[in-house]
Image 1 (tube, one colour):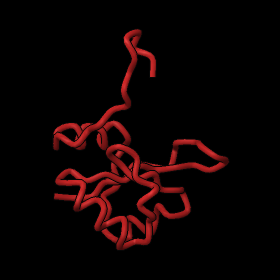
Image 2 (cartoon, helix red, strand yellow; image 1 turned 120 degrees about the vertical axis):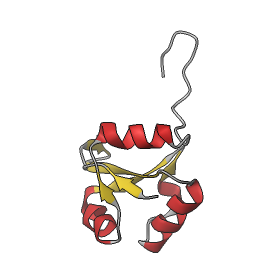
Image 3 (cartoon, one colour; image 1 turned 30 degrees about the horizontal axis):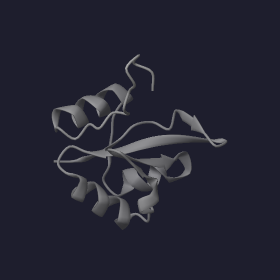
Image 4 (tube, rainbow, N blue to C red; image 1 turned 45 degrees about the horizontal axis):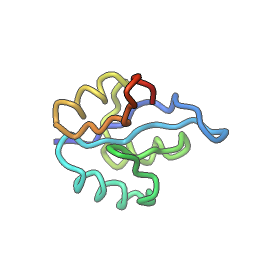
Length: 92
């Protein structure tokens, strides 16, 4: 099993962000994030948001680089995907 990271292509708060996920368990993901100094508050539903300047740290620690679609596919296949809730009209 592995930890995966997508490229830092997601803008927010004046920075670019990556997503860090596990294909095994949230416990594995939390342990990995803690080991590289990512605060628990960066966890959102099923992933950690990681700023671009921390991308290389995650890869050096063993995160596997994948595209965003591949990351979501692996997360979904693992049964760990927790999408945002939608209202009756399908809006987020």
